[in-house]
Image 1: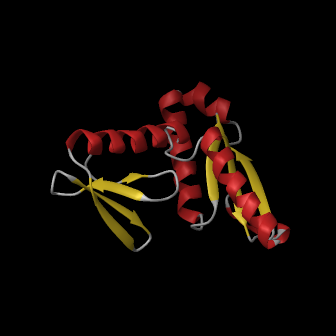
Image 2: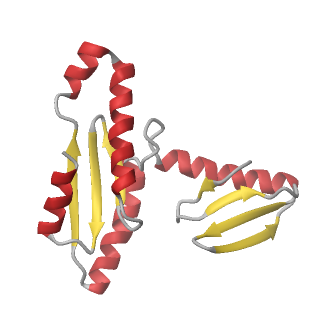
Image 3: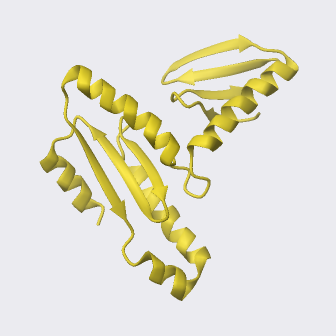
Length: 156
């Protein structure tokens, strides 16, 4: 595995230039572990398969499965701390018309563009997912309803 891959808990993993080490990064913390050959390949493959299971291939956002896991952790933390959590559900208006008139390739570009907008505007703690089709969800920890409404309107 070359370059960085995302671990489901937010860690990054990459193969070090030395073929028998993997580097884990979480924020600014780094840890190198010695894992030789096949074990390193299997560990990298495990992380890659988990990423594929939790993320939408077209948009690279979390999919419904990944969203369920991440948002459950967010809601559990909010219950423990008593902080507010808001959820925005969004879709692309008239998406079927885009696909019908311009084709699925253009529809895919529209999905990728909207996903990029959501991803660019998100805070680190927000959970953003493509739920299916042209439907998206955003969980906003520590966000009041009026603030969530402002955020939702800014996406229009």
